[in-house]
Length: 543
Image 1 (tube, rainbow, N blue to C red):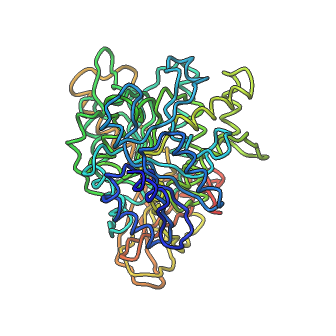
Image 2: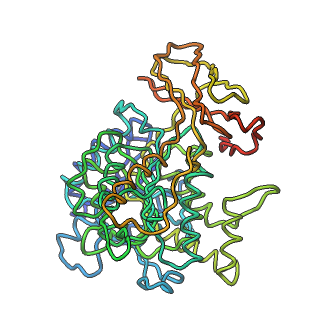
């Protein structure tokens, strides 16, 4: 056995530089072989370390490999081994996690220790990751094989469709108190209006009866499950949750289910597998004696390809800071792999924010708001660093992210309602081109009725769906044409009731990839002869 462990520990792909350490139970190595071969074909050098070593020896092996300066990824293969388990067989197919002392979230009822894999990625003991780390929480070889199937299909398959430009957001109602609840709502607003470029489509499903984004509460779980099934680039949940389920939607004295472990078998995904982000408590408690919601979603063939989630009680301010960093790392920095995205987002959120003249929103604004709750900057820093430990990636850190290409497009600065706007551009490939006139994220096309009391009658609840789908409809008009490579022109109708600062967005779907573009356009209505283009939010600039 000692010889086998030594062979595994020193295993490398020929003379290739080692940039990835895989900590893996020996019995899972045959299942991992196809993943190793695939990653080596991409140019990665893989070293496999047997998980039968203790945690300190595993960390030492990772640091020894990192001494070359080339290590970029650590993949832990196997579920965590809870300290309460003593079964030898369980330990043989597990990878131990680390427990860090909690300092901030214990004030809100969390356990005194945080389950974190960040410890393996921290090479200099400053609590910040230096390499990307992720975990495939498989209990056996069959589960591991299914997780690898999703990873390889995500990267290899030509799963075309507009799911690649969609971000689905589900938000629960608050409960921390008025001030902290406002921060929780800020996370939702940040995802909707500030950080997602206008070329992307967003949906919001909100568990507050006051919001037009709240559907019929009796069908809330069906709509949430439907948003998972339709496929999306990211599927985001913001709110309260437990280890095995999301928080209930409460309407008066009634409670309605949202999503839990019991729903996993009902998933029937038609679009691409999303990357799920749970900005909530406990969904990522991968060390619990029962499998968490995040683990079961990762295990399901119909579930997300990866899940980023918290292992203990999480806090609104730090989650809002994390959301800003995640959005910047994907949409602006365009990180190539999921592990790089998470690594850099964690490091960025731990840093002090720097305000720029004339800026609004983002981390500096969040810090200013949070200072009204906390006594000093050090408390803000402690909460952010603690959430670096709290959040773990359940998935493959080497997962190649999908980034649609840029489409060249030109749109007039303004146009009149009831007429047409001419959209021109250049496509490099043949494909189906969809051009749309849309509102900015978070702004509805029509003034929707305000609810003064919770829906009680059946007709009131049924009417919630009409308002919900209307609130999520950003489009004023759309045209889809078959586009040949080269110049294109589309005359897009402008409805008579459209007005204000809008966007034209274009999506080209082709066998060679997807391509996006957006441009602001001011729509002049009968009562709006002049529209200031400053009213339209600017798209994040790519680096």
